[in-house]
Amino acid sequence: MFFSDRSDAGRQLAARLDHLKGQDVVVLGLPRGGVPVAVEVADALDAPLDICLVRKLGVPHRPEVAMGAVGEGGVRVLNEQVIHEAGVDDRALAAVEERELAELEQRARRYRGSRTPVPLEGRTVLVVDDGLATGATALAACRVVRARGAARIVLAVPVAPPGWTARLGGEADETVAVRTPEGFYAVGQFYRDFPQTPDDEVIARLDRSRAGRDPVVRETDVRIPVDGAVLAGRLAVPEGAAGLVLFAHGSGSSRHSPRNRAVAAELNRAGLGTLLFDLLSEAEAADRAHVFDTPLLAGRLAGATQWAAGRPGVEELPLGYFGASTGAAAALWAAGDPASPVAAVVSRGGRPDLAADRLAGVRAPTLLVVGGEDPLVLDLNRRAGALLRCENRLAVVEGATHLFEEPGALEEVAELATSWFTGHFRRRDAPAVGAD
Image (cartoon, rainbow, N blue to C red; front, top):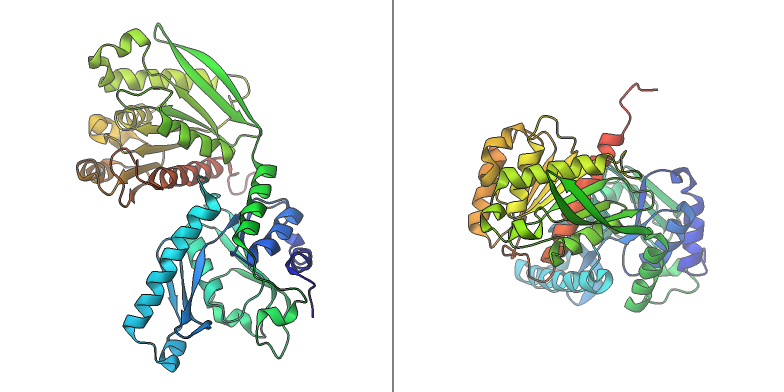
C-alpha cells in the first residue's frame, strides 16, 4: 500500500507539484474519486478547484473494462483494440455512449448547480485523478480541457502503471505520478482505504473550495452624468478585480434585467467587476423612439465608459462591453469608435445589423453568442462576423431561443462570456516580449 486514502494521496501528489505554485493554475478533479485528491493539490497550490466531467465507456457485461470515454463538449475517445477484442458492435457501443452522455449531463447539473465552470482560456490546467489504469478517461479529459482553451495541460495522478505516459499520445504537456509500480492491476490495490466517493462528498468539497475562494465583492449604487442626463447604475467590484465589464441592456429592459444580473454575478465570481446601468433616464425611456436609437445609446455607453475610466479603484482596469439584443448594437457601435478603450466585447442575442456601418471599425475581440433556435438573429450575426475586421467568434448555444430561457442556456452564456473576458483581459495585461 502506498496511500492510506485519497486525501493522503493528494498530499503526496501535491509535494511533486510544488513547481507550479505561484503560476496561473486551475486544478480540475475527475469526479468522483479524483476530487478528494484534487482538493489537497488545490489547497497546497492555493489554486481554484473545479471538475472535468468525463465518463468511461465500459464494455457491456464487463463495465470495469474501458473501451473509451466521452466528455463535455462532445469529446469522444475510443480504444479500438478493446472494442475489437470484446466483440462490441456499433449498436452496443452507441447504447453505452448514449447512457453515459445522459449521466454526464445529469452530473454536470448536480455538481455545478447554477455555477459556471472556472475559465481555462490561456491558463495552466492541472488535471488530477486518483490513479490511471487504461488512460481513456485521462485522455478524454485532456482533450476536453484543450478544447476549452487551456494553454498548458499537466496530468497528475498518485499512481499509474509503468510506461503510462505513452497511453496519452502527447495530449498532456507534462505528466506527474507519485508511483509507477510493477504488477499494476487496479488503482485501488495501492490504497488501504478506497471506497467509492459519493456525490454528496464531491459537492461538499467543491462548495467548500469555492466558498473559500469566491472574492469579496464591493457593490455600490452610482449615478452617472452623461450628456445632460443622470443614469442610475450598480457597480460591483471584487477584491483584486482583473477587469470591468459594462452592460448594455436591450429594449424594454434596464439595470434590473434578471438575465444580465445572472451573467454579472458569474463574472463577479470569476474576479471581474461589472457595471449595470440604465442607458436612458426614466423620462427618456418612456419615448420608444429612444429605445432603438443606436447612436444615442452608444453615446451613453461611451460616456459611462469615460466615467468608469476616471473612477478611483477601477480606473486602471481593462474594460469590456456585454451587450444584449439592441444593447449589443450600442456596444458594437461604441466599440467601433477609434478612441474606444475597450479590450473585449460580448454580444448576447445581439442585433449587430443596427450597427452595421461601424462594425469594420471595431478593434476589440468580439464574441457573438446566439441561440440555436433563434434563426433570424443567428443569420444576422453570421453576416456581422463577415463584416468585423477584429478577432471574432460566433458561439451558438444549441436549443436556446432569443431570451436563453431554456435550462442551462444562460449558464452557458455566462461561461462563454467569463472565458472571453478573462482571456482577453489577461492577454492585454501580459507584458510585451522583451519588456523589462
